Length: 273
Image (tube, rainbow, N blue to C red):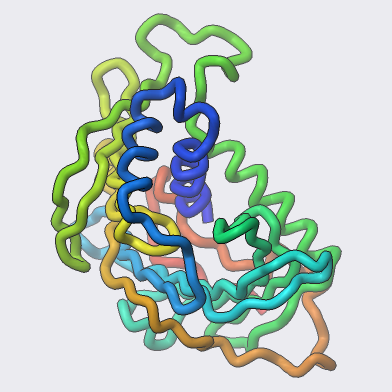
């Protein structure tokens, strides 16, 4: 999940007050305000991840909004399904998740998950108990914090001259992707003269607004492969009376997706029962 939260951090940053201070964030905001539409039920997007090794470490990740209802706190919320596998059409997926996520207006609050189901090739989907869900959310929140792009005002200790990461942008342009050509703004995270991470943010791509991501140093990449507006629920949910995942099994059942920022030896691991 680390790559996912890293991308979300970029998008959130661009919509915050910092957009007034950061030229790169201002460029993203300017791009997004020219025709970006709000997320709706039915939106979906599939990404292709390449972990290097001549294409031997390729897998796909799909995200879709498949329903809406009120959550336990009475907030407007949407059901978001995620799948990962080695086939773009998610034949025999290695992982499935379905979560109820609150939204404010039309913006999905990815840190406000109130229900969670997880399935894998060997076990039927199970819902997480509240204790297990709280544990997973705490873990995911820490990963998001670790991946968050640094801001000069947040540095506890000054970094040596030249080592402070700099986020820079280019003007909106047309970019080719596996899903076709889209308008996008290129962002680069640079340390000294080295590009650590390169991203293309596009208002045309639903949900995450990410067209591409590259990590040149380790030859890893992520690129939109398909997207659309006709998503339907695909996870077969267990009956309400089915046992839930308990706290002691939360980590073993929760899928361990590869981290884009680190070398990978394989596609996503199959979750343990």
